[in-house]
Length: 404
Image (cartoon, rainbow, N blue to C red):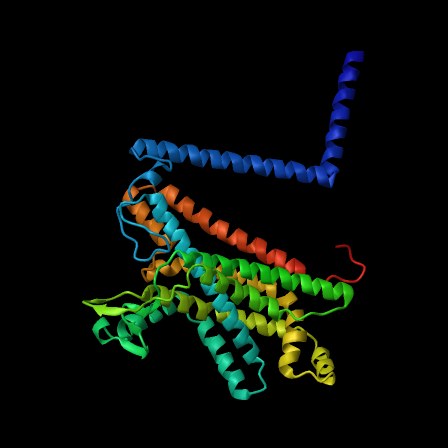
């Protein structure tokens, strides 16, 4: 009899403990999260096992061993030296660099153009404001892929053949093969000049940050333009002079069905950049316009009372405050341009998706190729988000007395 009472007492205490555990919001949340994690893990395990079984049944190899094999296909544009007998890994790396080039150049130009159009939308000049509005409304409502086809058709159909190439400037030619212009002849020193320019940009940024902090702490201002001039022009010039100051120029010369020498910007790359920049800048313009309008009219009136011109007010007062509103949605548009660059496959530009598709068709490694595409774009997106979030954190408004 006593043992039965003890058993009932034990069961009662267990039920009481489980009820208290379930009624605790934090503990209940942990239970739900654990269950969801187990379900997801079981689902992933089932998919992986089922995929491996099907591949084994079909006699299809899996894994990334194919990356060391010979690619066997050419890539029309490459930032590094690449030949058809190189490996698939190098071919895919060329695709990554091509995508990165489009993303960096496209976003810089799209932001600059978007800022200009967004400011023009608020212009007191009626014609400029209406033209900017028409630009935004028209471009945003035409699918990006159609715009890419249009710009590619302009280069292929409107521009003349190579033998009848236009020459708008001396030794600069426009044709169906793209834009050809003279460049300096190859020399090892140009690599170090580029590196010095990158270091100059970094030094210029750090100097600007130091002078701004010094002004906030001591109230003493010092012009920053001499430092910028020294870092961005003086340092590369010094490296160039120390490297022998090479001045030989490689001029493009028509030979047969194409130009020899100089540098060529292909119609595929040109159409892709123009299409992405024009399309994304229309969205950026609306973001800039909304950010500027979020600043109260009192800021404009106070600046006018201090004698500041409209341009100075916009540059020194309005835009710095509007950044707090502009940066978050602008980050989304930067990410959109990176992801939209995958449409390059539609006009034949060899970005990472195009190279990965060719690799997949030749090797049959569909799962691995799609997984690499996902990882590459995820890396680009997360890296961009991290940088923009850090920048947004520095520009956001911190109220007085708030904890940093």
